[in-house]
Length: 54
Length: 190
Image 1: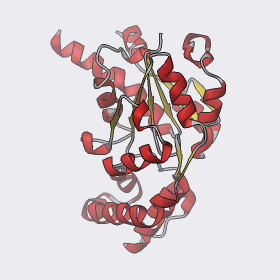
Image 2 (image 1 turned 180 degrees about the vertical axis):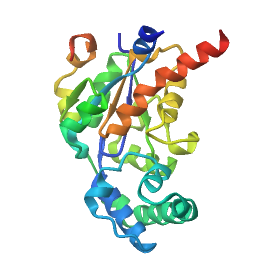
Image 3 (image 1 turned 90 degrees about the vertical axis):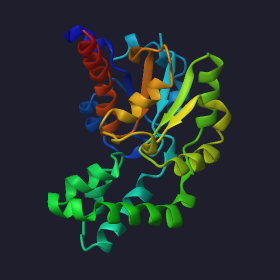
Image 4 (image 1 turned 30 degrees about the vertical axis):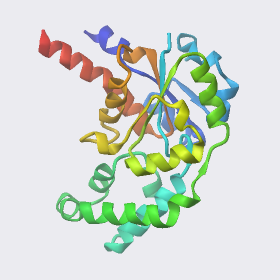
């Protein structure tokens, strides 16, 4: 059951532009943290390979 | 393989967290509570019911929740919403995502009318495949309902094929609970 649980959740990405500290976001479970939408654009499409992040 | 990306709005696509903080400070002040901005800022991203529930004793929260939340909403809509600026490059980002046949859905603790305003502000109305607001669900973030409702609009796509982008701890917490719902359903059927 446990592995099924882990596999069936969404992949959370954080952005820092809302003002929360990086440490707080990392602790909350974000697997990747970017600065803002422009940073996501700069890292597109690499960030779609979520298995290589982390 | 990623098939959809769900985006939070406030603090993620639009620069509104300071304005939300200001509206909460004013709303609590109106009803006699003086909370420092920092204390309220760290709450932004949760639904109103959870913010008020965390900051006030239970009996007072129950009594004043709809008044404080109502005043906050009105203050934000009338005085602050027009000041909110979009973060740069959102349309360009969404165009790239859409060009790869990946769906884009908005999922916010905001009201439907606020989301409509932001869609225009960001010039993205023609690029999104759906939007879920707090009006569509019973419980706001950090409960998973908003993301789960967004996921329901993405028929045939599994949670692990979806990236959720958010700016607050509450988005990550909500996202991490979606799978639990799925498992509970499975167990129930079993």
